Image (cartoon, rainbow over all chains, first blue to last red; front, side):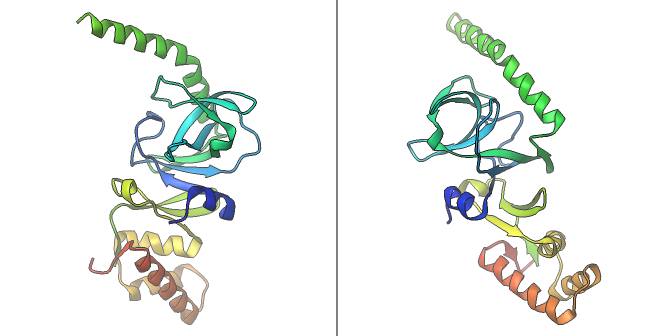
Length: 137
Length: 90
């Protein structure tokens, strides 16, 4: 089977079904498909496909970049991950959600990603409160 | 003939792409790029059809000579069988 790295190099794109729940509610496990293309520059809120040092392929959102270091996090996650730019294979430029194709340049998607980004501190704080609450049960 | 469960046709801009989805995608990652004609054949095969009906539908839909369509269709069906996405029994 040809690797995503080779496909991106040879045909200039890669597409695959979504595995896992870390990008919910935007992308649902087994249902949705992502379209990945090579990148020149990265932008905050880009959804990037990267390979962990363990070999695992992951699709998460870019929170920030400083030189070669990127901070990424899934839309449904609270744990941030630090990766290198060299680990990033490509950027999601479109996806299908419930069978409908959405380009990341669409107004609705851009609004979603902005709102998601803005709500991150609140979601993280609520997550911490819930965790603390569980300790006292 | 029918496309097996677990494969879906997706359109991204000008590209038609067939990918594995559902639980199948966990074990088998299939990615096939199709042209417009093959995408049309795929859509017919999703509903279930036979070779003769599919050839007829292709000739009706596209301005193509029957011999050329027949040859291209066989090549497409062969590739689909090799990729394990075609169920000949259905």
